[in-house]
Image (cartoon, rainbow, N blue to C red; front, top):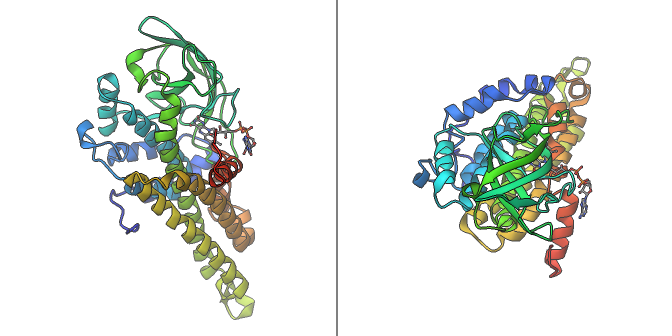
Length: 378
Ligand SMILES: Cc1cc2nc3c(=O)[nH]c(=O)nc-3n(C[C@H](O)[C@H](O)[C@H](O)COP(=O)(O)OP(=O)(O)OC[C@H]3O[C@@H](n4cnc5c(N)ncnc54)[C@H](O)[C@@H]3O)c2cc1C
C-alpha cells in the first residue's frame, strides 16, 4: 500500500504559514479552514451519491496527516468536521441530513462533534443529559464540556440521552443547527496546545430538534458512536499525532544538520553520535506508528474484523509516540527549541492533546486489556 502519494492536494505551505500566529494568539484558523473549503477538502470522504469526491479512509488519513503537520489546530478542526460528517452519513438515508451532506460535499457547511458532557467527563459514549419527547421531535438540556470549532461551525452533531432512557449509553445523535435557540458558548479555550481549535464548553437549554434531524433510528446513538464515530475519530486523531510528530522530526533534523560548533571546526549537532541516536530512535517510533495508522485505515476501509482491536491500539500507539518523539525533538533542539526559535515547542504542546482526548490512552489500555482477555468492554 502506498502512503506517500496524496490523493488530494493539501495546501500545506499556506496552512503552515499561519500556524505560529494561530498558536500565539490562540485564534481559530479561519483562513486555513477556508483554504480547505476552497480546495474541496471539506467534502473528502463524502460519496458521489451526495455530490462528493469520495475518499477511502487511507486517503482521508493522508490528508489529515498533512494538515496537522502544517497546523495542529487546523488539523483538529478538520478531524472533528470529518468525523461528524462520517457519523452523519452512517445514519442518513435522505431528507434534511442528506441535504446537509450535499452542502458538506460542496464545501458550504462546517460541522463538529458535541459529545463530551460535564457529568460524564471523558466517557463520551455516556450522556447524563436526557431528551424529552416534544411533538415530532425532542427537547433537551445539556452541558457540553469541550466542543471543537464552537462558534465557527454551521451545525453541532450532538449526543443526548434518549427519551425515557434509564442508562447513560441509551443515547441519540442529532444534527443541531448552530443558530438553534437555546445554544450558547459558556467559556473560552486556553489550552496548552492546539491553541486555535476553539474547544469550548457549551450550554444547550430547552433546545428543540425535529426528529428528521436525528441520525439513525431512535436510541441508536451508542451504536453509531461505536460503528462510525470511534473508528473515524481514532483514524483522525492518530493521523494528527503522526503529522505532528513527522513535522517535529523534519524540523529537528534540519536544525541538527545546520547548527554548527564554530570552535570545533564547524562540526554540526548531527555530527554527534548521541544526537543521531536520539533522532534515529524517534524516527523508528514514528515509522512504526505511521505504518500502523495506514494498516488500520486499510482495515477500516475493508470492514475487516481485526479493525476493532486495531483502532483501540492505534490511538494509544500514535498518541504516546507523538509525545515521545516531540520530547526527543525538544532535547535535540536544545535551547533553540526551548526558546521558540524553532516550531518544536509548539509541536511538543500540540502532541499532548491526543492522549487526554477520549478515549484517553489509559482508558484504551484498559479496553485493550479487556479485549485480549475476552472481557466485555462496557
Ligand atoms: C483539544 C481538545 C479538543 C476536544 N474536542 C472535543 C470535541 O470536539 N467534542 C467532544 O465531544 N469532546 C472534545 N474533547 C473532549 C475530550 O474528548 C475528553 O472528553 C476530555 O479531554 C476529557 O477531559 P476530562 O478532564 O473530563 O477527563 P477525565 O475523564 O477527568 O479523565 C482524567 C484522567 O482519568 C483517566 N480515566 C478516566 N476514566 C478512566 C478509566 N475508565 N480507566 C482508566 N483511566 C481513566 C483518563 O485517562 C485521564 O487520564 C476535546 C478535548 C481536547 C483536549
